[in-house]
Length: 440
Ligand SMILES: Cc1cc2nc3c(=O)[nH]c(=O)nc-3n(C[C@H](O)[C@H](O)[C@H](O)COP(=O)(O)OP(=O)(O)OC[C@H]3O[C@@H](n4cnc5c(N)ncnc54)[C@H](O)[C@@H]3O)c2cc1C
Image (tube, rainbow, N blue to C red; front, side):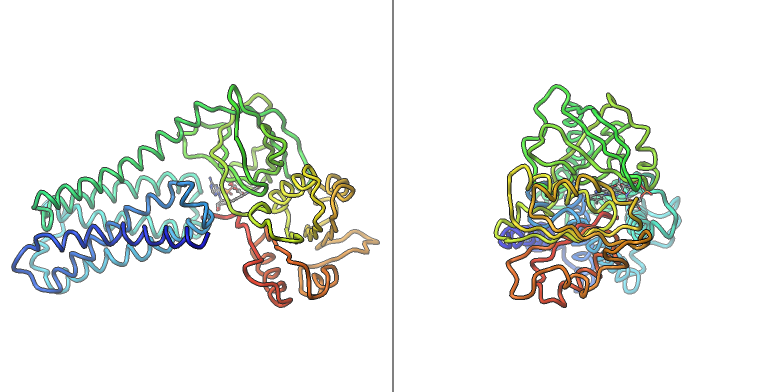
């Protein structure tokens, strides 16, 4: 796994650095000093990075598998800032030391079009990064933001390519022009694949809602089955799917949900969806027979990626139970009797989703179920409050423990506290894994 991670990071560096290295190894246009050429190198490097940004969110499975989609999205987010800083530095150097070359005006109606294209690209990229970083502060609805983000990125990229070709510096020779043409073409192909071919593939493999069931804590069970095809060949318990309901796969309205059912129940898939916002608050309006589309499976949060674990610890809060339900259901289906400790935090006793099923699973698994309630009912003798080291130590075996792998999923304050507690107990970081339900 580590080797595959290193290989992908190396490929990233090659993709970002090779184009400009080739440009500078080719014919360097004469008559310019170091800072000028440095600024050009920054421009090309920033552009190459922005091009690869499209690939990072294209959910290329071999690329996401070694890291997890959440980590790739995190890369995408931080690399966007670096790329923006590099492109801004490209402009800044020219503005500080070569202002005369930037023309007498920035008025787009009077300035050279290729310079206007460059400035427009910088503004569009800036807007894409700022609106992504401060989406909640700006009160941008997620779906609207996602459309805007795609539009800003495509137009920004188009403007930047126009700028490079229009300026023609370093792209005058046939070799360099071919190189840029190829790079631009591969970015365009990526776009066509993500926005057209992938949704097209989904429409060819439709699914149908077969059950809609309300549950505690506003968690609805939505079950789907393939409609006229074999469905998913396999997935690992704990992985997730991008689900489209009540919309077309072309609509950019897909949402990530953990698959709550076990792979052993294929071809049927079940999700536990909590009423929360724009899309999920209307989940109860979904009806059996409605069409559905999925892009799956994704994610690294799975017991099947930890075959050496001698026991499992799950610390979850609220709807964070869903990936763990898949793991427990799968362990039961397989007759796997490894010990499992499930710490399950909820507000009240009536908020405990899957409560009866979990009790029943205790009969089929070596499962110690520890409910932690924030507002316990009268007479409650179980755990209360929040996850602490003392609480975990009360239930987990004392050191030296068997090789345990810990799965954390829930509100960030809870998973952060659980991680601190586990580290305090000497659990190695590599044995603690967190699923983040918020990608952006
Ligand atoms: C790997 C993963 C697994 C998840 N599993 C489950 C699950 O099993 N059950 C469950 O109830 N929830 C799950 N979620 C969370 C679920 O995806 C969001 O709650 C849901 O998308 C919110 O949409 P909304 O329009 O109802 O809410 P909104 O109020 O519009 O959004 C709330 C937040 O959810 C996120 N979000 C909204 N739309 C999307 C989208 N299309 N893509 C990505 N993020 C979005 C944004 O951060 C947003 O701020 C999971 C999330 C991830 C990343």
